[in-house]
Length: 115
Image 1: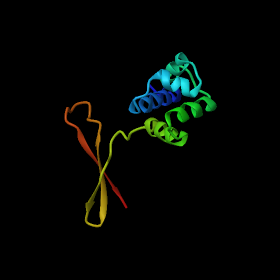
Image 2 (image 1 turned 180 degrees about the vertical axis):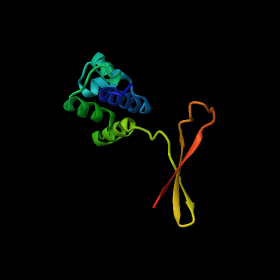
Image 3 (image 1 turned 45 degrees about the vertical axis):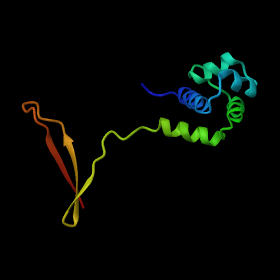
Image 4 (image 1 turned 120 degrees about the horizontal axis):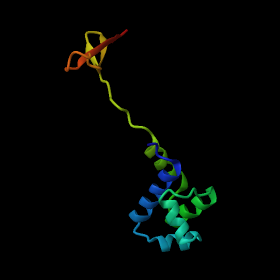
């Protein structure tokens, strides 16, 4: 399942709040938003406007660009498999695994030569 932007933002806001040992009530009061709404934003159930995000970040003493950078990093897909380049003479060979043939239960290596 794909991580939604509102879920990523909410998760990072909650992490920032708990790391700073602040309660929902404290942050909601400083940001001038209802406690229930802030809770919904943190749980990823409500999408916060840019004005509300700025107010919450200010209440947390967290720069908005820092929050957005953390959200972007959390949403970036991790590479499925790193395929190292192995030197062979002056050429490099990229090694990986290919799907096993239907009759065989052992995987075969896929070797491709990059010029």
